[in-house]
Length: 79
Image 1 (cartoon, rainbow, N blue to C red):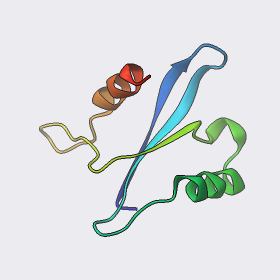
Image 2 (cartoon, one colour):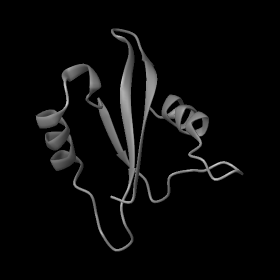
Image 3 (cartoon, rainbow, N blue to C red):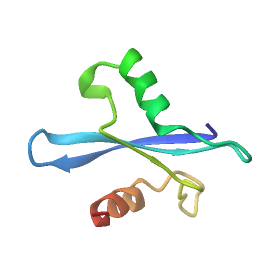
Image 4 (cartoon, one colour):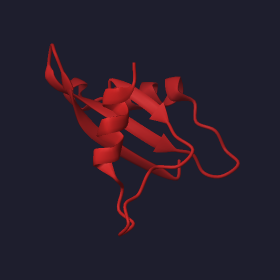
């Protein structure tokens, strides 16, 4: 994995849940099920991502930092 970012998103039942966005290294792939299993084996339940989304490129702002507001908006817009 080249980059990963987690964000908190609003959830009706829990108030907020963890969502992970990951970007694979060029020429490689990520198996979301295997990554979820790895998270389950090493993270407590409240720290585990409820969703794991693979992106071609993690969005960055003009300064080069990960653009979390854009990811939140993307997650909110997703069905």
